[in-house]
Image 1 (cartoon, helix red, strand yellow):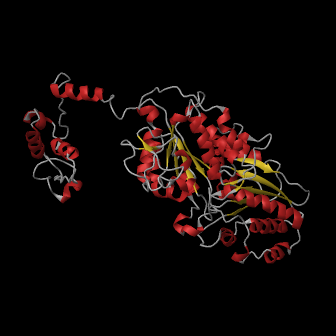
Image 2 (image 1 turned 120 degrees about the vertical axis):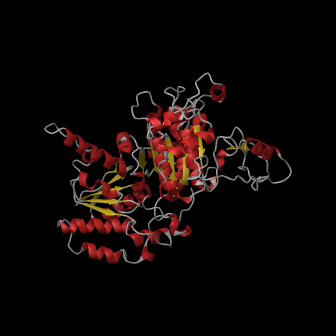
Image 3 (image 1 turned 45 degrees about the vertical axis):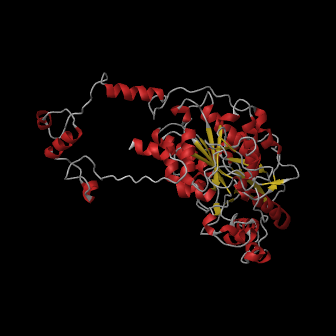
Length: 531
């Protein structure tokens, strides 16, 4: 077999095919070999076992096999045997036993603070989606002289989709054989550049291979003693939906790294077909104990989340390092704000912070939003104030999932420590003193923001995007799902009317005024489509 494969790999000039003929149950004797029932047969008779022994010439006597038919002995030729000595010698030459988890690894110098400055600055007058905010941050992290060579970007699609073609000239695409073809984009400044020293893994439409590369890089701290940080970027629908089992295996192998679900949300890819419309990946991700899921709205939030993730994976004071961070990012450009002064960084990391306190006095409400829906919530805050004299606080929820985990952990602690003071969940602490009903909104199905309902004492309603999708403009899709700006306004008015804090007829009047039942009347968001 070795000789055949060696000859095939060395032959030049023509395609070579190897036909490998195998037998199911090879070596197990006539009762097993070549029989379709092999998978259902669990036991060898003593006679079968003796034939197997004779066929493989194993020096174990009949007496040893007859002594206990259910516990046949193992045979080892001894460590001085030439076969064993040869195997151990070759294994040593190849770097030791594989797989093997090594307890220690190279020291890691985490990125300097200046590497995160690009995230804090915002986008100025230029519009940028959170995908581009992340890519700009990643570019600066790659430039970090002490840490950048540890980053392994992995893209199982066209990198240009995510604005990552800027990496081609410098980081280059990994290819063990180098670039042996003329690329179709060779006339472009950011043309394909393949190299044996390339840093970018570009496996094509191959999610299984991409997650395998992610797992290999994310476990190299243990298998090779060389910490690497894989950053796997993909269409958000095609991550946990298609390769969730592979991420479970990655968690089982204690993989560390970042999983970036780009073009996230159910209403951001309406023109590409409903199979792209991700309305539920945070729920799928929540089933993996090793995955921390975030739905950031702004670049500065991404900066703090990534920094916290790297510190957790490789920081000296971290005690729970074997985690994967899943960030959903969008392709809807907005003016990315600069990081506000006195930002509640703890809130960003733990899942919720007050983004925009109400600017007027009036009937009070709270709007909780995540990701691409945060600008809709801010616009709803303005409409409520201008049109209805309603006072709304807007909260950015960076992680519904982590808020729920914290709440469940607090309940578990109380359950296991009866009679002891109970810890208040973080989301409950944050919303302490926040009066009025809560409307929670995202571009995912309602079950995503509904995860924290039990930890919120206020009246609570969710808006989201349930169903397969809606092929039209983004504004129309958001009106169809009723998670757009004016749907938030109407829901707030309904809840306040039920409390007698606005006129009873206000919700109905608002539905007619904003044409809530007309998908063509939607105005929320831009055309988008760019990183």
